[in-house]
Image (cartoon, rainbow, N blue to C red; front, side, top):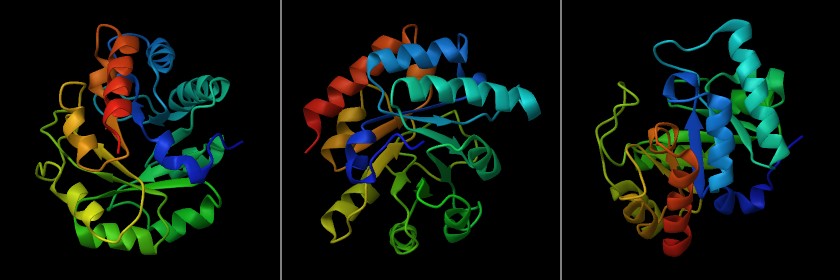
Length: 220
């Protein structure tokens, strides 16, 4: 079952939490529950990095987190793993420039949410042409979570998209936390996407609440 209306996707993207078990200081199930209590509006399962689960263990954790999202009407998105997303009947998938072509993913997941990472204006225009539901722009600030990221670009591309005639939901990603999220929002993003700002906070609930407060106060 799909837990989002694409017409309201800009609102759904306000506080977009991404995580897998390697990112969490405590049990990922508890981390997600606390983050939801704090006000996250979108969730992406990203099981990557040292110690990441594989096989049936990965599927089991994904299913547990998906059930929690369903209970709270939070869209459940899978990072990269289209096969897992299809198996779980996830609400959508987020892919990168080096993953399967968007039109191929769309054939496998008709009607679902497909997000695409973009780093240039050309990639954003291509994403729109191919029918992406939203784009993830970044890294906005330095981040240690991903080691294969593009150079930090600040909010320049977000501003460029918003000053053009292009219209697509935008979420900023990369090194974002409550202290710098305002810069992302005031320059045109619909929401902020975070991993460690919530997953490694002493209180995921409080960290999520602080991010939500900034986004709601500064969204245009």
